Length: 358
Ligand code: SF4
Image (cartoon, rainbow, N blue to C red; front, side):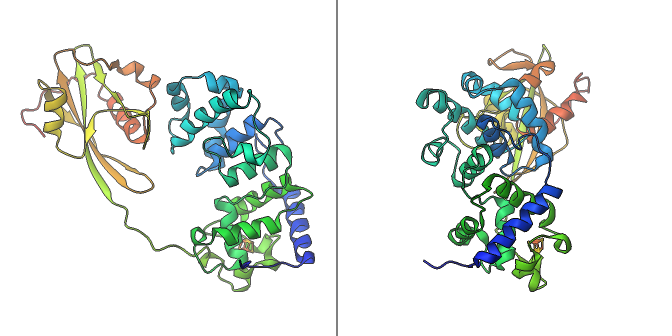
């Protein structure tokens, strides 16, 4: 096995010292930093996956008010867990947190595991999250490799491959560089360096504590790294949604299957096919009223264009008809929240009936 880059002991000492000095001066003050409660650190680590700190903070605070302990989370029903996560995206994270909380209660006697082997048994915790949690809450010497750390390392090494193709080398360097005397502050500093100085577009190399060791800086091409994998074309799905109101001014919603994309969230009936067959199936007597603006949303592997059409259904059928004022009790995906926002401007449904089906 080849190691991508080897630092001398002296270089490692310099890097650790300069990074920790910088962190003392410039490190961010974050609610979960220096937090001894491993449950809280776990929540922050999961929320921070794929999501920026400023977005996470209000979610983190609301979460801890509602679920202050792992026991409280284990006891919660999935709907309230998803509701609290609504808008944060990547909903599998919330479902996994809930599942893992139940594991802690049933398999670990309610005590969050504090060793690598057992923490990795919890759903949703991989190697970097485990390292993040145990170094932060318990100061254990475990390295990390989140998105920020990958970017910094790719630049320091002037890595010629996209990070996803070089994970083994990146882990080796992250292990090598970690300060075994002070892993908590070192990992936190490493993430801060990536988030605040070694940013994607305009890295602040002029004030970076690792400038002297950074190959990308020496090449004067920091933003050429990390190398990008060839771009795959992201497909767009064109969807139509039926927003059906009944005579009680209630709207029809349905729940997605509990597993899979947006699992367990609620939505308006929708399809990639045609709106007439969707409504004929669900609401055979529906009367078309009017349409709303198309909603656009991007997921990781595809985009959607979702056109909502409003219908009136005279018969009260099905069991999930909800007053507009009660919709906020259900967790919806972002795209359907955008429909709800438009609906709030059309609540009275006083527009004249259209003659033609869309
Ligand atoms: S010198 Fe620039 S490119 Fe290199 S680690 Fe520092 S900020 Fe990133």
